[in-house]
Image (tube, rainbow, N blue to C red):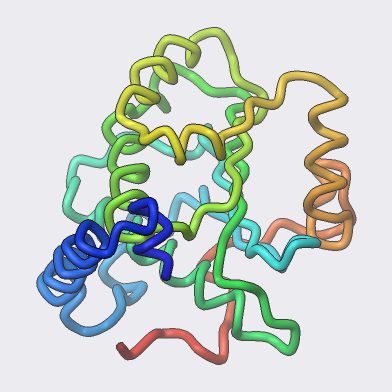
Length: 214
């Protein structure tokens, strides 16, 4: 169904997309998951945080852009994208409270420097979401966007499908931040963003349904 929705309910296009996904999954993730030890360099930066479920049942993923630096090993970065997306999706049905296997993300751009800017990484993440994780992204909040990122975002957004771009919300004022709190809920949103939760690094989250085996 997710593939059908992503292709406007066109069965032929959805079937082609599914076949391409199945081939990619078999080639790129032959073990069914990407283990921690294959992406240790990316995990060590502690730039990705995985929280609980939002009010709508979406797993909350937080990216601290100031902790990211362009990887010299782009293959490992691609594996890291798969690792974090798979684990985030798994987190929505791992606990007692079941989500709907979608995610909501916050890309926090506070204190971003030129050394952190990585258009290729952003494009890779969005391309994976669009091609291999259709209808998994519910909402992406771009928070605390500095002027040095504006032109980067304009360039990156050209690679986004209309449906993906419509899910991106640029938050630039206190009203927008209140919207995030209302949408996610203070029990899941970390204290840094007005909630009551603690930031939890991705690698510290233990799931009953992780790692995925198929």
